[in-house]
Amino acid sequence: MLPPRLHPGDRVRFVSPASTPDRELVANGVNLLTGWGLEVELGDHVFDSLGYLAGADEDRLADLNDAFRDPGVRAVFATRGGKGAYRIAGGLDFDAVRRDPKPLIGFSDITALHLALWKEVGLVGIHGPSMSWYEPNCGPECAEALRQALMTTDEIVVRQDPNELSAALTEGEAASGLLMGGNLDTVRGAIGVDLPSLNGGILLIELNHGTGLGMVDRQLTQLMRSGLLDGLRGVAVGQVIGFEDDVCNGWTVLDVLRDRLSKLDVPILGGLPIGHGAQPATVPLGSVATINPTAGTLTVDPGVR
Image (cartoon, rainbow, N blue to C red; front, side, top):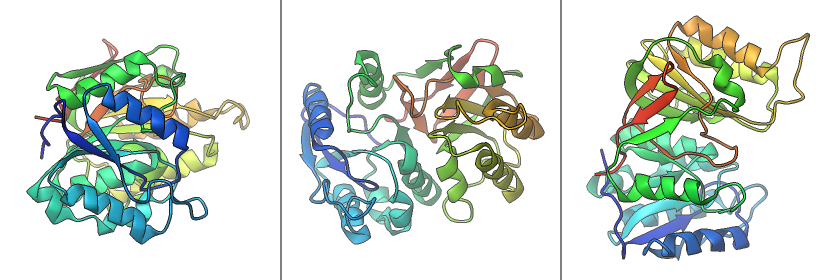
């Protein structure tokens, strides 16, 4: 299910399905999108705070569903990830999304919402920067990639960055399939709930904030044992952030990833600038993608029509 692309003059809504954003950074996000000619409005509970959440579950969910139900809202942007989107994913108004599909943009914990929307209605999501816009982390090239993904129907090509830690994992021949995934820990957390079978697909993973080598091992092993990776055609590995000091008897996070992913016996394209690092690319989730380890490219069909 491809939502329509955005046009100047369209209304878009910012919501906070997970943790509370910084007001100044959200203002930067508003300025960015208004510069594209979009009209930006904020959900009622964008800046609420309850522990590590952006307010109560029912309020965060209400903001999301209000945006999906409003025919004047043409896209829904998450202000940030963090924690909590997984708590409300099952309460999304899937009927409203079927009636009027619109893109949801976000990553990290927002992966839980992308997976639920794909599993229930087949909505293609946009794995892109949050609207807590921090210019040193997301410069003009990052912003233009997001704009093109939302306002054009151009094919999206993400090129491998040899300086990314995961670039060393690259091996195998080209492979194609529906691209699905996101933050590894969030993908693992969706097993048995919102994670669909990836038979015939390409798994996208990115890792952040040093969850520990053993945790990465458990996450990948649980995914493999779930059976949901049976028939997988390839793996696209994005940014691996925060593992610089994690070493155990000479093993690093690369050794863990290589050990686990090799059991899948599929092509791997690492080094993709997708995730929590600097200048992240934007890619649709649920569109047909091709990984080409030799050329170092991830090519994805547009996520809007």
